[in-house]
Length: 101
Image 1 (spheres, rainbow, N blue to C red):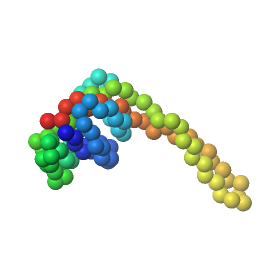
Image 2: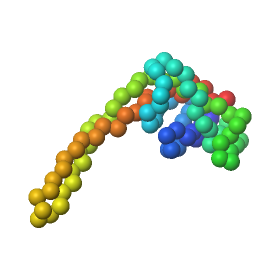
Image 3: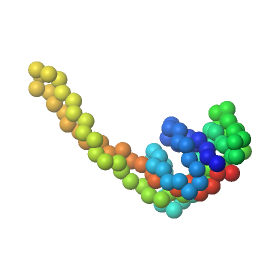
């Protein structure tokens, strides 16, 4: 049994007990959140939403809030002595899928 969920504009294929990193959610550690389900497969029977399934809910628990590793953004214009160096760390939320029903 698995489902395709939507979170932060991205789609993830998940099953019960799986831990995934999604775009930052405004929830505290230990909170339970409901994620939108786009597709649900149980024993070969597939249900698809248009775009979201109303009768299927994916319940997840927030395990951690964190930041990804740093990437360096370096912009420059040749022959002009223009240089700009920036760092970026993308925030994420780690969730554990509790149930899909």
